[in-house]
Length: 111
Image (cartoon, rainbow, N blue to C red; front, side, top):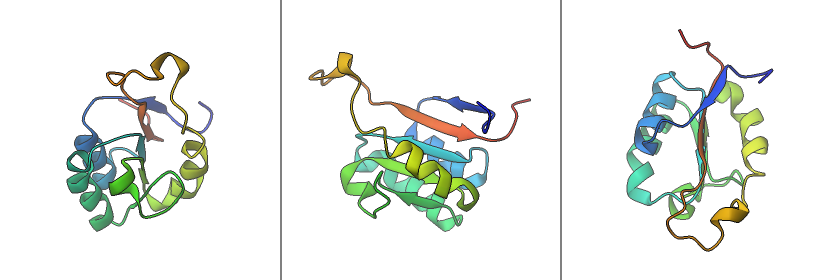
């Protein structure tokens, strides 16, 4: 995209959040996660000075499982973008096996 180097989906929400905390990723979002998938990574983000909220910008991310996390430099731009990603894709409607979209964002060029 014009404003990012890429969007990736590697797999583990806990690892993605750890990478946000250490600066490898600039941001992360995902829907419908379980608390055990995000509590440790969320703490890492907060302790590193990052921001983590639900998709409405509230503090209900652990209970809702809808997470937006990022470094303070881009979080204000990231949250409005991912806040619009609330609906499931039509092909996943009613399918409990369907995975919700997860994305990480980096403004750094991969080497």
